[in-house]
Length: 279
Image (cartoon, rainbow, N blue to C red; front, top):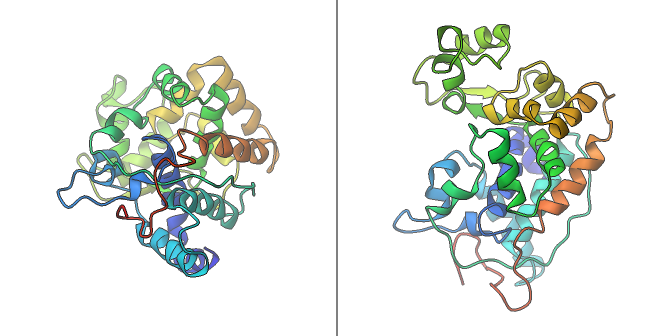
């Protein structure tokens, strides 16, 4: 992973996100990695079309199979890679629990109903996290993963051109920030990438919370963290905190919690030989 990060540092965000997208659909079972010849797998579903870095997981898996064939699942590889990219971007280290097995089912429709959309409000976010056994604190802490990585304009342009405020802007978004974003993203732009945490897109830190507190969170789901007393208090705490604060420790704990969602153990599932297809 250190080698990969040297060559392709922009994959840190996508690889962290891949573990999240895996765990929220059928649990952390590697189902996001499966291919379908008819385009009916999770990876073919709209929320997953912007995922990148599958080839990195394949490289990791190849190395693992060489050393210890049939031992480490693709689901575990995703969890370990998510931790490694966090560390590589100067974020926290945590001990990754292993022993997950890989699922045999990947369904096109399930990401649509299980992954929290970028336009979710706070009650939707809380209930989607609760349905996975995750707390309100896990929600606000894991949202901090938006400190690294980029987003396509299309995930937030409705806040610039098609909302309830002046000239169709979102009244919960800082007006100076709106002007900046409008200069990068025109109506209908499907291709441009924008940094989620401008200025420290490749550094895992608590500056995401400083932005959200200033009403500069990129997504509606970021801004929503100010609409609940518990999530708002955490945002304020971290935005006022020094560099390391409690966020690093909290992030490791919440990632371990997320890594336990719906895992397959014992005789359930299998250990895939190749991550993109069942044995």
